[in-house]
Length: 120
Image 1 (cartoon, rainbow, N blue to C red):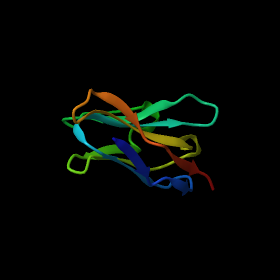
Image 2: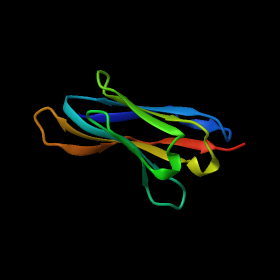
Image 3: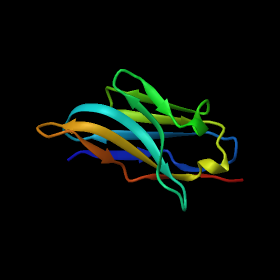
Image 4: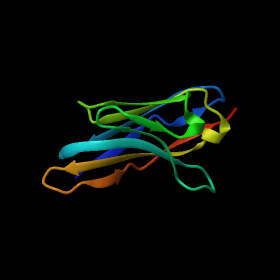
C-alpha cells in the first residue's frame, strides 16, 4: 500500500519560512513526478511546484524566487522550502506523486494535507 505522508506545516509570521516534507512509502517501483499543491479557503486547488525525474522543476508564478522544491531520490522524499511567506500562502498543502507501485500500473497519489498559516 503506497502512502504519502507530509510534515512541516504550522503557523508562521509574515516574512518567515517553513519547510514541508513528504515521504512516499510502500512497494514502489518508480516515481516519475512529485509535487505540492495547495487549497486556500474558498479557492480551487492549485499547483505550487513540481519536480520530475532528472530534476526539472516548475513553479507557479506567485512563488517563484521564494519557494524551492527538491527531492531526495534515495528516501523517496520531496521537500518544499518556503521563504518570505505572506498571508496569501495560507492554505492546506498537499503532496502529490505520480508513481508506479511494484506489480501495478502508474497512478496519482495524494497525501493527507498539512496546514500552513501565515499570520502575525
